[in-house]
Length: 341
Image (cartoon, rainbow, N blue to C red; front, side):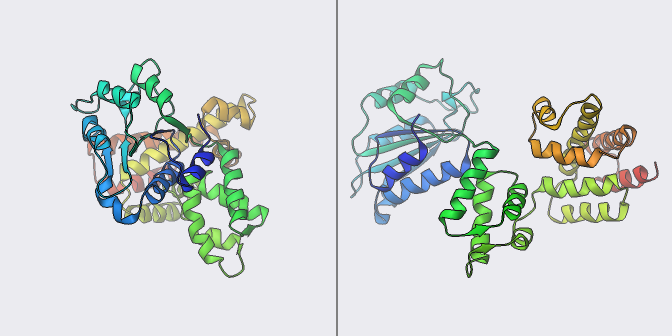
């Protein structure tokens, strides 16, 4: 696979390949590649007639190929973007659409000189047993847009902050990474707000991160878990009602809560067996930071208390799914009952 940064730099110089395959699940890289292609492949006035975007879950492949084989309208080239080409993977057919793979193979062997054909494949890998997958990877400029791991994400974001002329103290930077959960796409979105807030002196403070970087639903749930464990009924119900006001579904909130308490129980059991945090993360296949936080939460709690909470949330889920009682108050009933144990 080709290096992502190298290919983006070429595009910005006006150097394009006839066929691209962007393979990987990092949404920030995919979005940046799309914007680069749209902004540098042709003049703004030519886009309306010479850009075609086709979702393979909604339209047949032939529509995109017909467009790719057409001559540009009053412009130098055409740009044809193919989204969600699931036929390159082992996924089952998501629709009744007929995708003409022989036509695609023929096109790849003789691509149009006036068209840039781009496949955005948001998958970890393609099914290399399929002839069309092997042909596309061979004929196209295949660019790696795989999701970065935690260390790579932090390195990328740290470098981006410095390159933009901003600075963060080490503790603030660590706090920022924790708030965005080492997610590159989310980090880049949140940095836009932080850069504006620190525009005057280019110094991003911890307070800016605290005030401007939005909590994810999972982070709100983590706070909710903290008050459940403290049996602080009033605060827990306040947070729960806030989540309802934010249009979160009771069954979704409960499912995440249930998953978090399952993790707490697992961490408690593994700690008793002598596992260290890095090993717990590997065994449970979760982010090490989640294990660290879970370990801190359960350190002074008994396994029985965690089991009682977990059992209560399982019962709440059953009530939500079967329609027993008002959905919006099921968590409150659980909390009141749990606080009395």
